[in-house]
Each structure stands twice: as structure tokens, then as C-alpha cells.
Length: 242
Ligand SMILES: *Cc1c(COP(=O)(O)O)cnc(C)c1O
Image 1: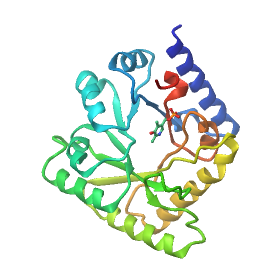
Image 2: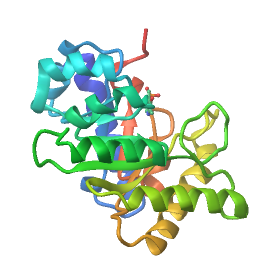
Image 3: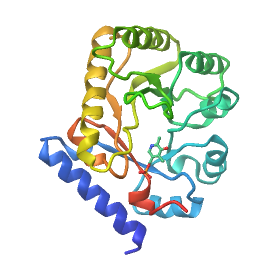
């Protein structure tokens, strides 16, 4: 077995183990292989080993790979999208995990209304929230949302604008936990994202809140224990990025 096949298999086993620990079905977690910086040949090898979902964080880089590989994979945009790149994202990606402002959502809605998707595939998005409050992170600010009324008000009004848009199908939340030395230290952030999802689902029943995209190479097993439906894993599958 190649290194890639072995690492992919090891990650799948870890996902299944984490699911078992909390009584979840392994089918309830989608592995998104984060293929940023990896060439198409490597992605094709992962596809040969049964991997279907791939995450990319830069539009330009992804365009080339999608042109080469196309619908043999499902494409997830996981990085910040500049408004001038929104058109390509609407045309090409299956999911967007990184919807980080109502302004961008409104831009997506306009492009979709103009037929920018080219077909009837639903445009599925997750709202990215910054649950740790670190200034380096993208996402609608959600730090301390349970106790900070101002944060909650701003967050709720952004979400209100997003869920009201035609054709932009909100399906859940995404976050990045802070970099910590022990995976356990990320647990409170994942738990907080899940509670936030539950609160938003109560207040905005017009959207579908079934997706929780959280967990990366160093902390995905904890994220799964806390309810992740999508884990975004790069290094643990493809090795350290050069
Ligand atoms: C790079 C990246 C990942 C994957 O990180 P690894 O540490 O390689 O698993 C996940 N999510 C986002 C948003 C990323 O940019």
C-alpha cells in the first residue's frame, strides 16, 4: 500500500473509533480531504483509494484542479473568498464552508439569480464563525456568544440576512479551533459551536442546520466526539505541506 493509502486508511479508522466512543454511526461523518497545495495527480490517487470529498482554500489553485478532475470529486471551498472570486465559487464548488459575511452571501445570491451556477445543483453553504475570537481568523465573530449580548446580536442579525436569501442554501456552521498543544484543549470550542448551531436552529428554522464542519488533522477525533459531521483533514492524509 502507498503512504497515501495507508494514511487515508488510518484516518478512516480513527474516525470510526471516535464515532464508536460516542455511539455515532461512522456514516454520519464525511471526511473532507484538504488537498490545498497538492497536485491533481495526488488527488487522483486519493480518488482511486475511495476518497470523494476534497477541500481547497484558494480559488485560483482549485480552478485548475477542478478543470482536470471535475465531477469525479466533490469540491468544498474552505478558505476566505474575495468578492471578485465569488463568481468562480458559484460556478464550480459543491459546498462552501467559509461563508463569513452577509455581504458575501448577498453577492452569491445575485450571481445565482443570474444563472451563475449553470444548472440546478443546490448551492450549499455553511456559515463560518470565529468561535475563539482570535483576530487572525475569518468568520462572523462568535467569541463568548452565550454571555456577550452584543456579539450575539451582531451574529444573529448577520445570520438573519444570510438565511433570508433565495438560492443560498444554509446548511450549518464551520469553525477553526485555535492551535493548541493538546487536542482536548480544543473541545470547548467544538462544544460551543454545536450549542450555537442548536440555538440558531431554534431561532431560524427556515434553514437546515444539519452540518457541523469542525476538526482538522490535530483535533478531529475530539471534534467528532462533539458532533462534527464534516472533518477537514490535510496533513494527516497527505503529509506535511512543503
Ligand atoms: C488547511 C486547512 C485545513 C486542514 O488542515 P490540516 O492541519 O492540514 O489538517 C482545514 N480547514 C481549513 C479551513 C484549512 O485552511
